[in-house]
Image 1 (tube, rainbow, N blue to C red):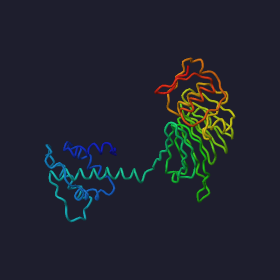
Image 2 (spheres, rainbow, N blue to C red):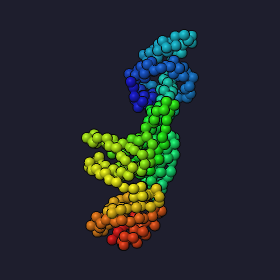
Image 3 (cartoon, helix red, strand yellow):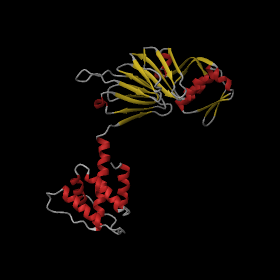
Image 4 (cartoon, rainbow, N blue to C red):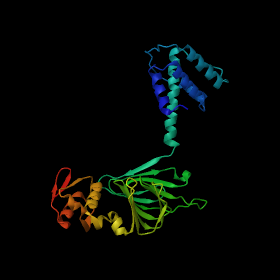
Length: 331
């Protein structure tokens, strides 16, 4: 089967009168095997307007004209008025058929195929979105969520997350009392759930999953790891790049504090704190004394705006901070 790219390429050759006889036959073979080919050939008569009237094709069109004429007769044998193709008209009609087929492919992809809906946030921005299934997602800054809109036919709900989001998944039943499982897909793992609330952060080659209520299962991208169940209060961190894994108990206040307008850290390294702030605000943070990055802090910072965060860092951590155009330097 000819690919769409190949059809487009041959179509453009028709428009420019550079298609060879063999290439024209490829198109005719494709049309002959296509459903409703008689409609396509009829459109060659009716749809085409003005073409490259002033440009002549340098090759021999006789064989191609005969093939096209026979093809039309075979497909539309009951029609009395056979189209007589002349050199110039044949070029235009064939181009019209390809144009029509390309348009048909594009229309089918836009309206008949599955659609993807994208939700995204800028640096420093959060957004609450309601998915078509009724689930509510709070999207953190610098994040993107893709929703596949063919979930009813597929029988399951899927989103792809890059960044961080807090999910409140609706519990759905169809007419047969069958559930529509909900899946969150990141580079590192897939979270499978029916109805629950949880936070997912997928940044810097690592995915963190915190379960607030309900129950979920994690299917890791590393095939050597078995599917793992989580209970409320569990936090799982996993990276497929370096294979690192950690599971611990925590709370919503600590693990999804951004949903309440703050950053809460409990005995967290300065490096991890600064990495998160960089991801949220898109600023560059330089640290002169690299040994400071290992120092642990238990601290709360306001999630309001960049200037307020910088002031809070300087005050609460007793840091000397210099602002520049791209971000800050910690001395």
